Length: 278
Length: 273
Image 1 (cartoon, rainbow over the protein chains, first blue to last red):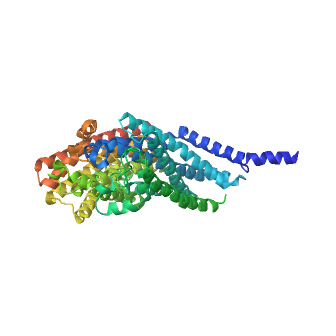
Image 2: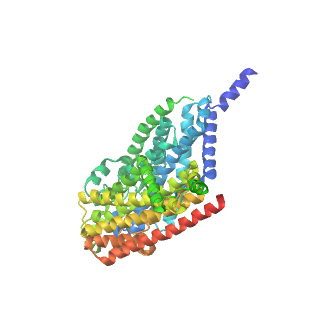
Image 3: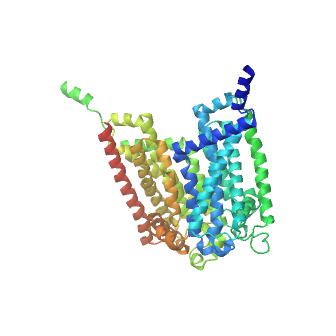
């Protein structure tokens, strides 16, 4: 009888694959409920990318030729989506910081479950949030008349980039929050993401930049991620594929950048988490 | 004896101007003591300026309408950078007012023989001083990096005056929100509105190159009126008409904002005392 009880407990506490999945699911649901309870924490991550799409494409409509296909919206919509995904990721860090301040996170740490499960739950919530913002901004861009000559593959490349960026941003935010354990770290998280995105080809292609920015953008991994995100929207300016379509040459640098950032920031977040004690 | 008692009971009220000066001094010192609050309003405008100057210089210089007035995108960005810093910094007045309410300092002020108007004026005057200092700082830094001010000292003086008025204007709306809500978080939550106000003006993008509804919105945004008058002063040389437009619009915004804030203060005094 005792062994049956302990097995049941093991399953519930996430020591098995089924138990881990249940905890991840519970954490995601809790995170989504947080949006309903505190919409102010989520709305800006949705509104700001839409605002950027509208303002940038409205302001630089005259310079369509610079972006490769005569349409500024095709250039700025993927950028805004990546930005929305990044902010969807960092909000996971913010909600974890609030959990630290309210003492709720200590309860997680006291529970006999794998800490990887804890991280997995947070990342799953980031993925879901970014999928939502990506779809919303894409719908607004479609209403605004964005063309996707790369077709379904182009949209998939965009979603892949956005989801990857949300994971990277969440790992960055969580890594800092696990160390500082306070919402005061919020500006540092945001500035890191903001600067990384804007010091890339977020606003204009490298060929249109002047001075120091071009040098920085060339080595910024976000440039390759944006290149992958835009693969189905604008012709690639570095290695244009024969005809218009999503070429492997546009994809692999972005995938490598996302993979490398995930490994580095994943290690950063895991090290921070392992040091935690309730 | 009676006279003596009366003298000791009736408080020795300093002049309202002196009270305002003391409170504005407190406002300035409270900002200086929090560099973490002050630094973003200096760092972000400079970051955006450096970024946008490098990103958009080639695209805009290729446009004849733009190249006719501006030597570089940095020239175009100088007034916008100043105003961006001022707008970002001026929300702090509202946050500080809300903080005073949250910690009970506001109630202590009300219990003291301080003129009610001085409470407001002191807070906004501190913001105006900060705005003027920001204008000088950004002008010096951007000039060092190659921005031109063809309007000379007169144009810089107008920029400083406009910055002060705008700090009062935007700070006044922040103070109104602070008084109404008593929550610093609510005032900070209104920060994106400042962002929207800037981005829907001709702050970062030349209006001549905009099209459609976006251009219409920028045309009716008072921030565009101020910026374009300042840009003409800066790049075309001194013009009394441009100076009048820039100072007039900013002063009108400040006046409206003060009236709204005073009403919010009177409303709070009626409902809480």
